Image (cartoon, rainbow, N blue to C red; front, side, top):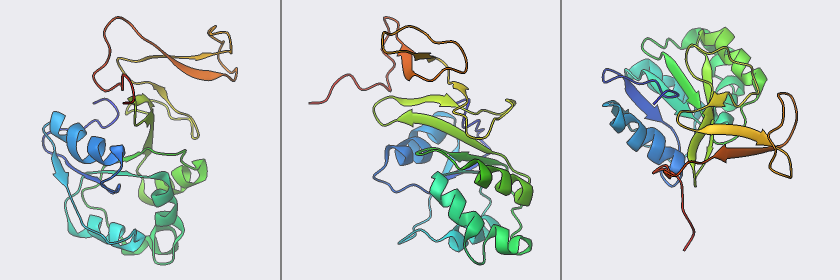
Length: 188
């Protein structure tokens, strides 16, 4: 809810393949839980120009796409970086990414060409979203952001001790007695 920051008047488009959990979250459950319209556009394969042209033609207000898609949308011939004057995003106002780290250069370049910030999220199929860069937050390119409510995320060492800021370790989620409905309990 905090990462997507959608309203009932938004139109959300997630370009992920339907087989990804990202599609279920970004095209289904996420928008629906917030009363938002989910936009669907069939593309036989990824085409950055088709994506950019879709924003010019349809009133999509929020986009979630994989980091690789953001990079190709910036660097492919006929796209934003090479010919950004061609594209007028009249309604797009919120950009999201998840699935792999977003190249900080792509984030900076997208913002300079469109004026829009890309908000990165981190999670896994088995646990859903645990960290994100959210609206009204200072974003550090290359960062996972902050813990997404209600998660208590810490960086720990090999003994399970919480490490101070700036130290490298493993990502851990402190669990209470209630198991979040998005967390996988086991594989069968």
